[in-house]
Image (cartoon, rainbow, N blue to C red):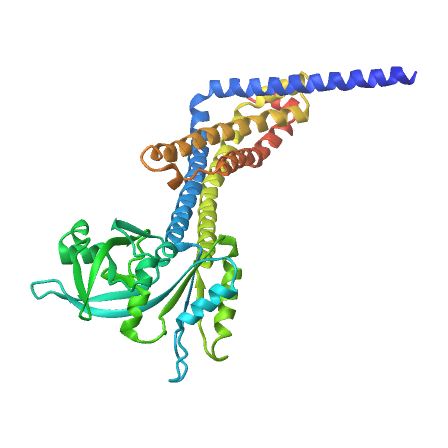
Length: 418
């Protein structure tokens, strides 16, 4: 007897499931027939969702592109770079950084992959025809090139052997080479004088990412070995210390360790600025994310307006199909079936517009990728999910009112409607 009951219950559930499938299939078919009968109304209603969904894709892409540009910019300067300098202000009793501070940091702080002191001087150099310019001279170590991500365009950068031998060699910026010798290539192996001492140009360099003079490198800049630059000052005092660490995630720890190592070698009241680009990178990413979110909220307004349009059109549709609703109820259609029919129509309109808008939104950045590297125009799959998910949500939210109104109609009154 128990087995018979279980078999009967199973059959009932299977039949109910089949009926639900048939009802859903019928509802979708009715919605499609309704769209075919009112193509212009359907197209105009979906147009708002097309624009809103496309704007979501484009906003996210623009936000990611701006974020990637900022990240590449900072990484080009040196995302793993840490700098230390002495701002002064010790009431006439300065406590400068020295070359020994660099050595102490390298010995005490693990994970340091590169380190360079920096001496800074200025000299006036004649470029001919009475044209004299103030030139920035920086004394650095060979590792400075990798720490600052410098690009050597011609010749080479000075190496450890040049430093050991105190070679009078220099690498110069492109503007300096062009001003003095006409071109970058022509400047290689040429000589010029710094404070009366002749130097041979062995290379031409530029920053991987132009910092427009906001960093230590200016337009007219000469780099010479620190071991040679030290003879101009006669002391171990340096302007700035540069470090790079192995892992980007290790930068904050290394920064704190460097600050402690430097501070331990100086007076307790002396203040030193130890800075990292990683913090700037994190800040830029946060700002980019906030701007993208704000733009997404603006796009959401477009979607909301489109939702109101869908609701108004569906209300008009319900009004024009009152007799149809009465006939369907008279032949046995339930409250749930009527509600689901009109809600399905609203969701299909919204989703159709969302799908078309998503494709159009993706078409723009994909087209741009034919002309620019793909890495510069990132496309997030989440933007597609957000676009289609929002389109469905708008259809449900703004389709519920007209669908409920249709389901609540009295069949007798609906049949009398002219």
